[in-house]
Image 1 (tube, rainbow, N blue to C red):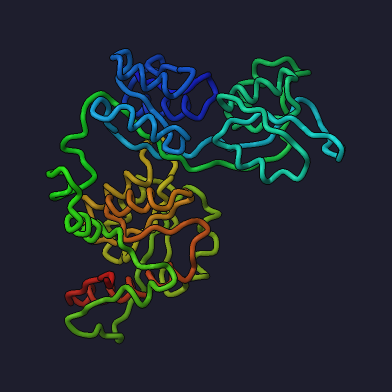
Image 2 (image 1 turned 90 degrees about the vertical axis):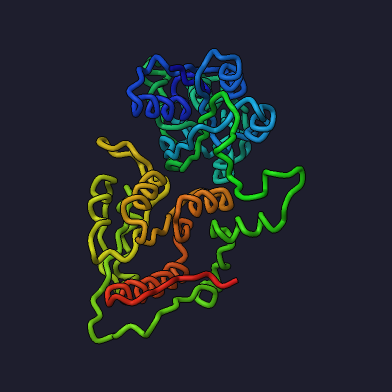
Amino acid sequence: MKIATLGPRGTCSEEVCLAYARQRDLPDEDVLLCKTFEEAVGLVNQGLADEAVVPAAYRAYNELVFSHVGQLRVREILYSKTPAFLLAARGHIPLVQEDKTYRIACHASPSPLLRRLEFSHERVDVTSNAVAAQLAANGMVDLCITNRHAFEIVNQNAPPESRLQVVQFFGSVDMVWAVFERGTSEGRSFWKGDFEQGPSINPAAVQAWLSAEGVEAAPRENLCDSIRIDFDSSPSQATRVRPLALFIDNDPDAFQLIPETFPSWDWKYIPRIDEALIAVRGATVGVALVDIGLIADDETDQSGARLLAEIQRSEPGLPVLMITGFRRDADIATACFRLGASDYLRKPMDVKRLQAWLALLAKRWQARRQGMSCEVRVQK
């Protein structure tokens, strides 16, 4: 089994592929590092590799997809966090020369970070974060934006006078990756019903799909008015017990203010997937908030998306709200809804929207606890 992706060593692509390979008990040598993502996909198309891993944020992703229609299909979607991004330089560079323009080596993906810099600079485009770090270590540019993994690899191999130092720390980024393999997408189609069965688009089928998949979620500001709960009778207030909400995220800082902001629920912070799978089976659990970019733990090596799928299998009646830091709302929303989530919340979370959900789900939980039928519905 050969898995192709972008090299050289130190790229986020290599890191993701190595973790993916190890999860499947494949040796590290099965990861092939290429000069471009196009080359990686080409190896699969030529039968020289079994799979290619490409980030959905890659600027030429659509071109890759449409160039290989009927030849390649997406085998799996991976979710990951990148190593932390940082601004680095060889030695110490005091950024005090207002009349100087600093040359910064930077790959296209993290280039939006350049907007945070408050000094004059010009970007030197490179093919990867590893190359950016190497150029700075060699003194060919003034600084680089790279990731921590590439930063450490370069410093391991560089003499003391060429080692990089951190000038500014940015943090990690949530990423979505597509795993391509040879074959057609028959039987795996995103669309349902009559949409694919004729030469033209069937508007009725599209609308039916949108409704079935929950894509037509209410606008954020009108959530309370657009989602209602139907009871067969009003739930009694006399026997009310506080429901339990699970907050499943590797980042404890994200949970810090949640209990005091929403005190009408009991809250439990869970950083690990294996612990979460045990906790969701509790009778008092009314909702689970899951980070879609949940970092894999040592034992299960699963993402938040996979945890959502496991919850749907073991506890299909438990509402799940996904938490995401992704920027591509439409893509992530669709993925969450397809996996069975009730909604998704962008970081930093919309307090009013989460409060609306918690108020509705508390009523739902109380009604079910008393044995009444209860349904949460989005108004058309």
